[in-house]
Image 1 (tube, protein in one colour):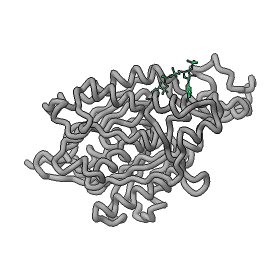
Image 2 (spheres, rainbow, N blue to C red):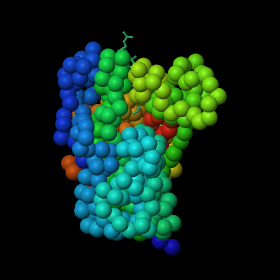
Image 3 (cartoon, protein in one colour):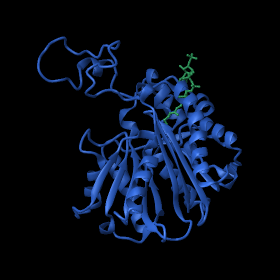
Image 4 (cartoon, rainbow, N blue to C red):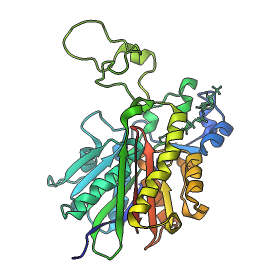
Length: 354
Ligand code: UT7
């Protein structure tokens, strides 16, 4: 019996026009181009237009290109998977907003929202792969998109997080293939919630202080019915942004990345030398360099573009994959590996025969 696998039929990306250099950030906070380059490799990032661009509209621009390149019409899409940590609304998720933005009126289409932050694209690919292998769907639109610029703290207090992140979107069309040896060969997903708050945006949320009673969120000490989502103290004390224990995340990332890539190689019987292109989630150029060294890969076997875009979380892998493909660095028949680690903590990998 022929095996059905998932093929990345097309891949595209969209980044906003507005370039923000490291030097630009020094106008708002005590930082320097030298510090940011040395610690992260980032030289500049893109910021979406405050009012005219959202996580969904950026995703739609990338999706339109992917749909066109796949040679299908938007009405052929039978499932949407949207990975983001910076959605337009708290709910509903961006999946249905993307459906509307693209003008897809077919209500047979399902829209799934993925909340796995930096690992969102790998998680989304893994879910899509199962739907395609079982014959459920034939044209899945998978996107990762982020508008980080809306929620960053531009004071010096926020510099450890703010300088890293950028905005952008990547999208692909996934289809079944029966071509021998082609497509997604394996996917591997992991999670460990022990350090959930070490890379998180906690407020607003339903936590009510649970697990976090050493922090004063300004909850009134009363038995009035109903919980409180946002307090004035959260606004006044700048508690409505992301926080990160950078060194813990860094140390964990450099062990999980190589391990989860090795897991994908072991599952398929390949060696790291067989990888034609590794696309690591663009978290920090030093993390990518460490992973490259650990796996003994040459420079031409690893693609990085964090220098231009910063860390775009769920969008970083599809943006990098799209650029690598455009530049001819991923070709038909290549063995492509993607891997991610981030908030949760969650991490994962996939091996794809292009
Ligand atoms: O994709 C999601 C996953 N996220 C990651 O993978 C991020 C992983 N972590 C990292 O990439 C690094 O930990 C960072 C780039 C975030 C930080 O680099 P670091 O080498 O771990 O620096 P640090 O946090 O230990 O801070 C060192 C110093 C501190 O000053 P003192 O206490 O030594 O005086 C910070 O206050 O650097 C200071 N600092 C800055 N200085 C200038 C922190 N951020 C900045 C900044 N500009 N932007």
